[in-house]
Amino acid sequence: MSTILIMINGVPGKVATTILAHAMNDERFTVVPFSLTGPGTEKTVDVNGTEITLVSPGERGEVIKKIKAEYGPFVTVDYTHPTAVDTNVAFYCANDLPFVMGTTGGNREQIREDVNNSSIPAVIAPNMAKQIVGLQAMIEYGAQNFPGLFKGFEMTVKESHQSWKADTSGTAKAIIRQFNLLGVDFTEADIDMVRDPEEQKAMGIPEEHIDGHGWHTYTLKAPDGSSEFGIVHNINGRDIYAEGTLDAATYVEKKRLEGVKGHCFSMIDVLKNI
Image (tube, rainbow, N blue to C red; front, top):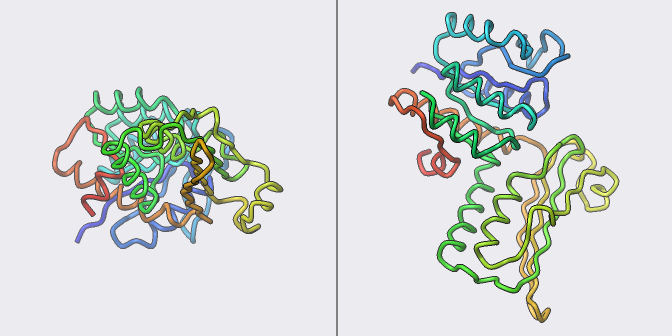
């Protein structure tokens, strides 16, 4: 059985490197030993004994041409930086690179428009952890079938991630939008973003995961204080994201082989087809 060629962009970032290490150990994939990265990085990095060539923005056009000529079609996975998302997607679309976008941030409407006007399929999701995506789907089901269920309830949202995460959690934003449909008056600006390590330790986050975690708590209180509801999903480390990301890459390759072009898929689409 032939394997899927995959290139993970964002190395030496910690999430991208974690996904790359998992891909190397997954029999479905053969890793293309290159990674698009930001300016000012080293030229190469060793990941589990494999030398990965890091490609800066100024040289990526020529390098991608050479990679495609040597390896053939491959799936790209993006775990770069929120500030690079828009330009990266434009680059993928212009160079016919089917991709999985795991990075949050960017102009999501423009990203989808770029893909829809391109000749490639892509999976774009604010969270690649399959269990969290399933939870989001359950909440979305409730919003569609029981609109206004929590009307008048007061909501608080706390999300904690490693200090270098630059933007608000895309998962929190997505879940809040569903609670808005459920009748809750809450905005993204009301989210309590925790990035301070000392505060995170006080929350109970294990010290070894301060530099890599995603803890979310959503609390809803009735207007008269007589009832309270809560949803919690706490993730330590990054391994949970690898399985979903690689399943998404497999899905994108399947769609490429089917000839699907100019279409954005979600992780819900992936979950329904694995």
